[in-house]
Length: 112
Figure (cartoon, rainbow, N blue to C red):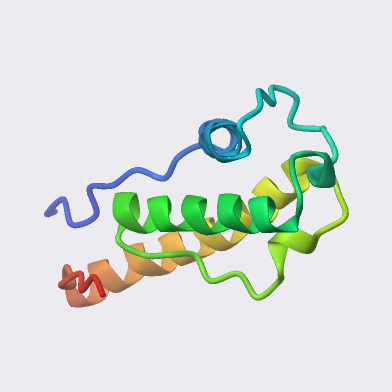
């Protein structure tokens, strides 16, 4: 059987660590506790920049950008809940990409 889908889905822990790195890079502070309230990370513009840059980084790593319908930067919840929402969408899209590649072969990635 050919190795059609050679990318491995990250664990939630890895994913959370990547998000915390994005938070620490964009917010200019050291957030280690994923249960910290999301609004305490920064103002709405900073949180939007964190989410957008993180989704863009996933597009570079995996060839697709998770499509989240919610305005994640406005969620009133712990930071980990934001990560959980993104991870859920990412995992679903990752599975669909895997199935499509098995059925139709590798697709050509078009970056805009």
